[in-house]
Amino acid sequence: MAAGIWMLLQTLWVGGIWILHFMVVPGLYSVGLASLLIEEIAGVLMPQMVLITLVCVLVQAGLLVRLRRLSSLWGERRGQFLLAVLAIASALLASLVLWPDAIRWQLFSYLLLAFFGLLLVLQPVPRTVAKADPAVG
Image (cartoon, rainbow, N blue to C red; front, side, top):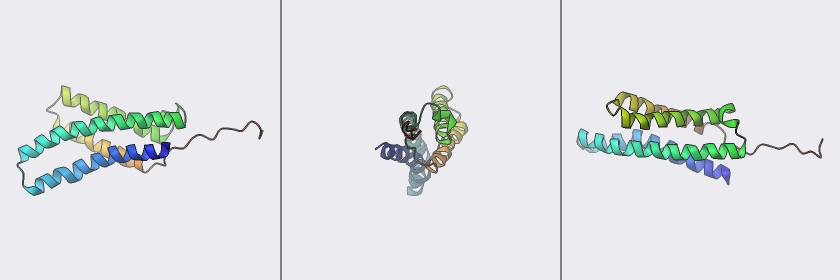
């Protein structure tokens, strides 16, 4: 059950980021819409996608802690990627509010989210930690 939730959340946020940036926005340009309109659409959809990413990654981090242990957040590669995504997504959302003219920073941060998402997809799905059986000795 937990593995299915993990994969669903990962598909939602990683797939959403990649599809928005590499398919939806270029598709809007190919239709021939005005650049200003496309920028406005992307400006609305991108923060929403980053919020979805934050929620999904928080749930994934909770799942990882529940399945493995608290130290897995900084001790395992999956946890490190999740923490990096949390930091980047939080910084991106903060920059949208505090520094709205930093378009290049925001694009760089968004692409970093896509990259870390891809790296996380390549990691195995977390399973429960095998507990030592006291009877085995």
